[in-house]
Amino acid sequence: MVRAVCRTADPDELFVQGAEQHRAKTVCSGCPVRTECLAYALDSRIEHGVWGGMTERERRALLRRRPTVSSWRRLLEMARAEHERQGRAGGDAARRATG
Image (cartoon, rainbow, N blue to C red; front, side):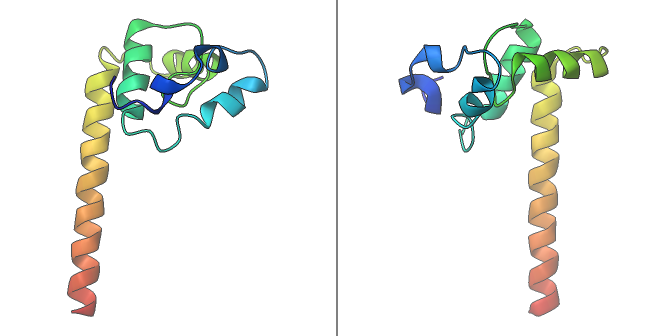
C-alpha cells in the first residue's frame, strides 16, 4: 500500500502490546488507505498488530459480532460509498436550503 501512512513507520511501533496499541492506532488516523488496510486484516484474519486503526482485540470482537460477513472489503467499500453518498446528499440539501 504505497499511500499508507505507516509505510515509513517502524513496524515495531505497530506490533505492540497493551496500552501501547492505543498509541499505535494514532498512526492510522487520517490514513488514505485505512479502510483497505482494515478490510485486509479482517479478511485475512491477521491476529497481531494494529491494522486499519483497530487493535487485535478490537478486530477479534468485530469478527465475533459479525461471523456471517464473507468479505469485509466488500462490506466496508459499500459502507464508505453510502457514507459519501449521504454526505453529498446532505451538502446538496444544505445548499438548496440556503440558496
